[in-house]
Length: 239
Image (cartoon, helix red, strand yellow):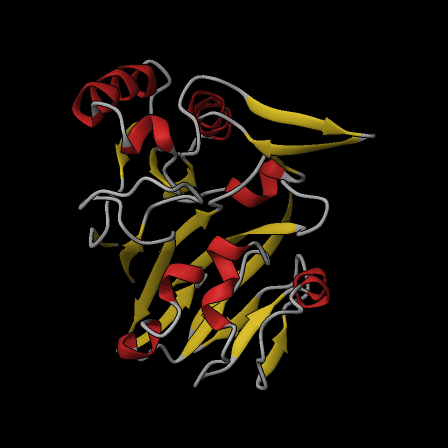
């Protein structure tokens, strides 16, 4: 399985050469490419990537609005995402049931519910092909069944909206927003995940001194027994 980080920028105005496009991951296996998320930056552009399928984590603009004019391939998403995705004219729709492994183009996706948004409920995906298994969750406060989601995964790919500062707010009884990278590294430590990658980068990473931040995070991660890096647009990884 090969991973290509097509985009690594969150829903912020600032962009750089390293973090230019809205967060999206291409998962490739045996010559087939499946794209996870297709935000507004990709409108009119993603077609040149020729994905065989697209999988959505949730319906926020930076994750799904690149599909406003439709898609030339099947699009897979949980029911709650389809219910909130009213601005996109997608004809070939497929349902992903949470906690049910679903094979798409030879790659297995298992959706796990996460807290993030009331209006656009989100999931993270356990993605497996061959002997490789990763967990991909670009936006979250927490994973509802974290132990099952992260069991025996090789890499956790998580939310980089904020590094140290909490970006979590309460709406009635619900929590919305983003957990800091620091908290996500603690999850990896507790669940025995050896490697973490930060994507969906917020202003702290995109506008800050990324080298200094990376060094700080690597030290923080190593204290938890985790190898960590910040993803950038175009980064490739083979498992």
